[in-house]
Image 1 (spheres, rainbow, N blue to C red):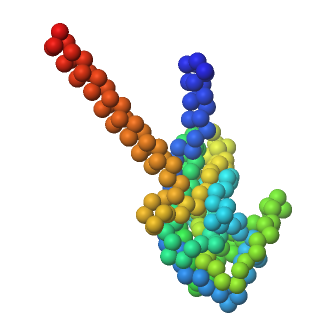
Image 2 (cartoon, helix red, strand yellow; image 1 turned 90 degrees about the vertical axis):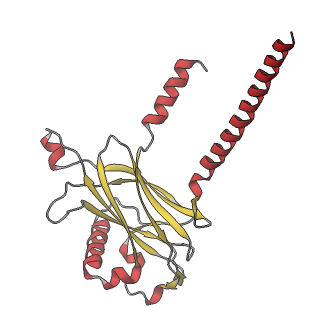
Length: 226
């Protein structure tokens, strides 16, 4: 592959990379009895992120901060099949060409159901989801006991333009939502290949520099002898 082709491939990869990231780090709660939790999770019609499906590509609506939406538009998701006491992080990644401010929060289920403001926001979002016929309903089987958390994402547009249409109705933002467990509660699992690559690169660089140094030193000794 020649140099122009390599440059074009690199540019294409960079152009499709999600450059901005916002995240929240948390520890999974203990399991609890779902049947005694009150509202049915199935009736909420929330999209679910589990340890088996850790990544989702979404298009999130946004709005400029206002009196009722000081942090933009709310979107709720359900994190389930978590391992109790396991450390996780949830990341939302989006392209730099779509300036947006994101605020991520995770809530224990009992905290949401016991807080009027949160349960009202969750109910309003759930009604919106149910009213949209285009939303595909997921057939999710809930266990009697599970470690579950609510995830709330607030998205606010962060740009200014003379285009009044965009200012009055900013377009949705394409994002990738990732649930990433920590290895030994210290290191994100998704960064393991990067860490291995850095170790291999550092080891190869050390070996190569040592070999170059020995050859240079051997060449210097040979010239002195001659």
